[in-house]
Every structure is written in C-alpha cells, then in structure tokens.
Image 1 (cartoon, helix red, strand yellow):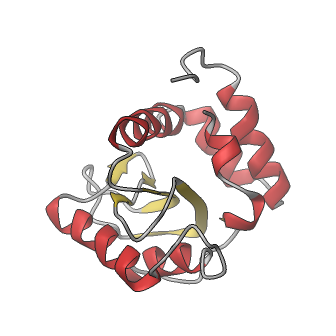
Image 2 (cartoon, rainbow, N blue to C red):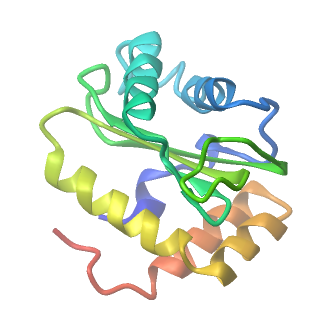
Length: 158
C-alpha cells in the first residue's frame, strides 16, 4: 500500500489558513466532510487532539504527523497541508512547523497504521523531499512529489 494511493489530491491543501494546532487539525479533517469513510468528524478531531495531548506529533525539522486510530473512520484516510509561514506546533525540536501530514485509521488497523507512520516519518526526514513539497506550486505537483519519493522505497507492500 502506497501513501500516494491513500492521499488524494482533494485531500491536499496548498496553504492552510489556520495558525494554530487545533485549527490546522480541524482544517485537515474538514477535507473529509463529504467522505463516507468518516462517520463522525468531531469525534475524529477529538481523537487526533487526544493523541496530541499525549505527546506532540510535531516531529521536528518543520513537519508534523497528526494521527490517530479511531472508529470514527471506516478505513485509512490521509491529508496533507502546508503553511508558507511556520506555525508553533509544540514540536519535539521546539521549532515551528509548516508541513502537516494527517493520518487516521480504524482502530483495528494497527499494523498498517504503524507502517504508514514509519514511512511518512522516513520520507519527511529527507530534507530534499521537504524542500520540494515547500516549493511545489500546485496540488498535482505535491501529489507527484509523494509518488516519486515513494518509488525510492522497497517496503511498500504488507
């Protein structure tokens, strides 16, 4: 399973409007308001915020992976957004964040959830990849960057 198959262009935001953690999470979750894989948007936001309260998903190096396992979704969903001006996200390196990859999986999809988080983290730790995402001019370009980066990995099946 590839991230580029899970994240659709309609779930990518070139410029997030929100300037805080809660707003960014809500803005990304709102991309799924007409998606039948999400049964309860407010419950999904609450699950992601609950996970954030345990420990920030602001990994460092300018990116965050807000995520959760929740039965408010029926499958794996993903969204991506960025900000031109970095936002304080209480990242582990205490630096602001401007790349956000949201991931939510149904409670019983623990294995795929962990593998996808690992893959996202590995991809986002690549400085050149992050720079490409920041410089992309269109949603299609961002989606293509994800596809091309994933082609570098051999562990895509499970």
